Each structure stands twice: as structure tokens, then as C-alpha cells.
Image (cartoon, rainbow, N blue to C red):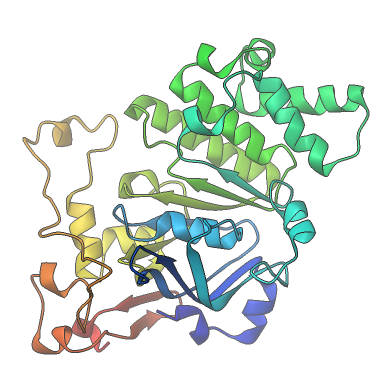
Length: 339
């Protein structure tokens, strides 16, 4: 869904990140290609926070990898551009990408136990990121490392910096990944499911850290999740992905309160209760999105959500709907609104 094509060119010039018509697939045994992203377009303003929402397999992590030109070897980018600060990262040379990754764009990986080196102390792992991008003395490096760790650990920062990852809790390891990602004060932070393995209380703490850092560093944020509850108070806009396509894009509050696409509405109905909502907690069970995600190797014509949609019409099975624009900031791909 090419929502950004509807915006003025002057707005595009002001954007920090501009993803246009991005198409990515993966080579699989037998010579076939499995589509992961198809025609994804969106922009991000400096300091803006965007939520990327969707089920597992919707293309969220592929989108994060494509923004950084950090995809596996079997990935094929057949179309599109990823412009960051006016530079197309898909066409950038390796030495140019090295300056961007970790320097101007920070990435928080999904699983801290896999992303952190088990035999290197936390402070050294943060220092390594800074040392790659900044020429500093040892004393300056030590000072910057402690300042970075203190930003995400209000207490006991010295002990954390001197610890090995296995000596920390899951929430503390998640904060260490954030510390690595913001060590060079990037213009953009991409957080890929950073709270997926954490309990609700710790999730809230991590979200608070991200909100604080975004304010302190005037940093743009892309927050990737399958849980709509996590983006409500964190992001300005939300982009909903389904089977590699953008089905809805708009202001977070507007999308969560008045979802237009049937898939967005189904996701919200399956949303777990917010922490402290005792009335919601007493519900016996949550609604589930009906049916199963499509097999991307055997896609039929038409809307990819059609087999699972209770509002489907005849034309839904015949062609993919185009975007319907409700206002300048909210768009949805659904024939209910014209398509």
C-alpha cells in the first residue's frame, strides 16, 4: 500500500526515513521464492515513533532488516528504495553501511541471550560499539560507556557494566541491548520485539526506558511488536502488516480506537489486558484471529486476508485492494471503503 505516494514532495524531503515500494522475498529449496514484503511504503519524520504491528510471519523483522540492509543471504530485494537522510541504504557500499549501523541507526535485537556475547562483560560490549564509530581515548571511552549504561540503569550501573550477561535478569539483558543501540546517540532506533520474552511488569519498565530515551535524545523510533497494547502510549503512528502487505497505516490512537481494516480489528480483539486492568484480567479468554496465516508460496489472487475475514465480498477473492485514504494521515487497504 503506497500511502506515502499521496503526500506532498516537500514532506518527503523533510523525512528522516523514506521506504518506497519495498519488495523482498526469500529463496527456498526448489528454486522458488517466498514473498516477505510486497510494495511496502512509509515515511518517518525526525523524532517520530512508528509502531509496526502484525502476527508472526507478517514481515516485521524482514522490514527491520531491510531498513539496515541487513538481510540473510537467501533474501532478494527485487524492488524499492530505503532512503535514510537522503542516502539509499539498499545501494550503499559496505563502508557506508558500517557508519550507519550502530552509529546513526541503532537496532535492538529480539533475544538478548543470543545477541549478547556470553563471555564478555556488559561494559566492554557497549564500549565496542562506541569504539567503532568514535575516535576516543581510553578515558573518554570509559566515561561514555558509564554514561550510556546509566541512561538505561538508574541504579547499580557500575555493577551492571562489570557483569557478564548470564549474571543479569532477562529485563536487565534487554536494557543492555538498548544501551548498545543508543551508545552513539543514533537518529533512529529500531526495536524488534524487545519485550517478547518478558513479564508484563518488566515490559512496562522497558517501554518507559524507550519513552525516556526518545525524549532525551530527540530520537526517532520504530517499535516492532505483535501486541497492540505495547504501542498505545509509545508511538505516534502504527503500520499494520499482514502477509507482507501494509493493510492499515495511521495515527496510533485513531487506529487502535477505530480500526478500519478487519485484520486490525481482529488483532485488537485478541489483545491481552493492560497491566493493572483488573476487570479485563477477569475475562476467561481472549478472542483469536480466525483461520490461519496464508502459505506465502501458494498465494491466491485477491486480498490475502480474505479467507479469514468475516466481511469478505466477491471482489475480495479476485484482486488485491488498493489503499483508501480517510484523511491525509490514515489509509487502509480494504474493499469495504472502496479499495
